[in-house]
Amino acid sequence: GEGYEVFRGIGVNHEYPRHWHDETLLCTIDRGSGELYFRGAWRHTPPGSTFLIPAGEIHANRGHCDHHNLYLSGE
Image (cartoon, rainbow, N blue to C red; front, side, top):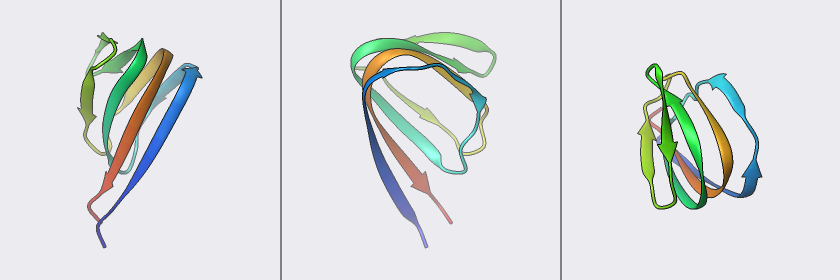
């Protein structure tokens, strides 16, 4: 069935190399900032930014921030 999972990251200071998720990802940056590598370019993710990454899309991210992730599964 369809489902979702919520993840909260506090004080995340880690670089995640290129990877993908089986679920669609909706991420909000609550505090701090970072960078997202998506579709061939690094993009700044300041506080208050929100982005959506489709399931299976290769991406990477780095920075120091607090954030919320919502993983949406369509299976």
